[in-house]
Image (cartoon, rainbow, N blue to C red):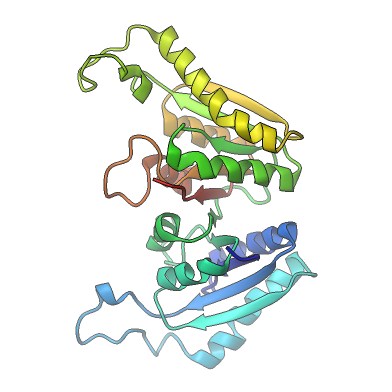
Length: 292
């Protein structure tokens, strides 16, 4: 990873919001900000006779002096002292951002995900969360949120990187950390006996709750040793996982989740929890890719 923050720019209002967030993140990290404007389409979706981009919509000179200039000005208004660089790339946005992420500490995209489709989770965020070389941060929810850093704990090996990232973010922001683990009667640890998990009925709820509590403690404890100054609240909630995390995001300034956790479908790019947060959280969402 590098020491710069990258952000996708396409001239839209959503992209300018992403520039604001990225500029603040760069300032927080004492890093540079790199603006990336990609124009073109993925070759996988082109007809054989199709042009890779529409010349009627993308002229190089107005692009450089238009969208990128406005984005750079916006960045300097938000964080006057940061260094800002630009890149114009003939490629699909997700491919360009993936390549740029190889030399970045953080990749930022707007809540329209460079797709122009408000309310839809486009391909760039999904692709970066699954294949990027640095954590992904997506604009979501209310402007300039305050509150703790919220960590979605699932106890998976793939989620370990998200735990470390959340602790580091809480330290950067000098904010408390809420490590939230949501469980229910379908939790994996409910099926550690001989029963078939497809037909099992959880009868010893107290046993399952205790196992979930131990998992939460064991997940957080090593990082509390690394960040002894961190104010950490371990929160165990019995509820539906995705609605509980979305509800908790309303009191957070940032929510952090792993790209893939327990119970993900084989072959899926993102777990259902991270997808739900990217769509519905009420604060920015960081998705951190870990080891499978």
